Image (cartoon, rainbow, N blue to C red; front, side, top):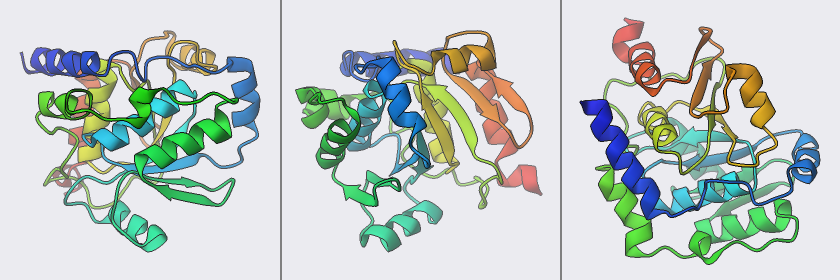
Length: 244
């Protein structure tokens, strides 16, 4: 029953964002050439419930970009401190592009940069640059603030190897998994696989399917495309109780 309620509210949140963050808008073959020449992945410091962070993640789905996500839920210390040291203030989203020595605050500036650098001359849609009460805050309210605050029993230390999640921003079930990763402050590689993604073959090779979410934990060997299995695994494996 709880998972059904989660799926329903997450689906409504997806509807509020229309089609943004559902498919790639770039030529997959050209984008593959661009991303393969990036020696280091982009780094995004954010938290799932933030409407401004959401627009950046939508842009990354549409540009078919993979990124290292460093969740910064309220109450966390580890990643928020990195942002404060790097940029001078504790504000989100915060993008670091190590390939070009660029660090950026402000969602609008980040979206514009991503399209200028990786968008093959395209301009972002108005929905990625402007947030209204409905499209901005309604998805957060529908999810009752999930993905906003650090879970009180989350492990204080990240796992040795980064987790990996195949996802696209506006997928209802992938959102639920990202919320959990945020609440546990677990860094992960976000493999965006919206419709038309150049990474779809990689997803199929890993899972035998093109459905998301698909989660991989290289620390334990756990892999699953079932949200009902991923959630309890995360909270059981990366809680203080699991380490005692």
